[in-house]
Image 1 (tube, one colour):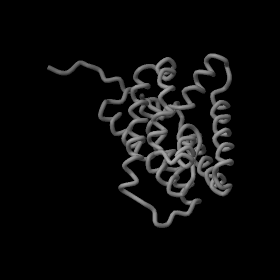
Image 2 (cartoon, helix red, strand yellow):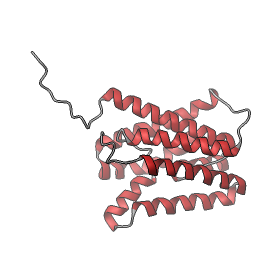
Image 3 (cartoon, one colour):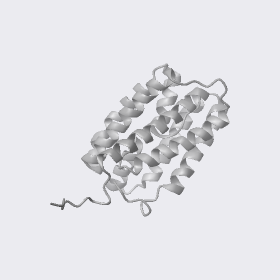
Length: 205
């Protein structure tokens, strides 16, 4: 007797989601390692976590995981349980991977320009993998969408304002050249996301 159940072609299976979340978080963890190795940072909560890790000496993973905790309720309200669960798992995986990576790899030579570009590329690829499996790395993007729904203030503007705050804060605690190289990496990341994140071309969840 044949199986009459119909698989939703727009819904990823559990194995597909598992490899997507693992691939995405591993790539972003590699990006964080590159940034940390060169003393650079990026935007959003990940960037703030890196800057705070330089200032306080605390680990990126612990700071990143903690800063994301307040955002999960908004994620549930705005995106639903499925997205929230995947996002919590992704944040936990990234936090864990960034704790493990320093014991697995190091960089004898790492030019800040190379680190910035490679970090932007790997983070962009990792985030695209997460987006295409209905997940994120939490943080400001969720708040931005919530504010857009409640007030009409564009989500992109909220994210830009937050990133400006991160870079302004970094100017007071990090050398100028580190901030400028970090800006390059952020531009590479944003170009990759802008060009490739198209829901009209990829609609699976």
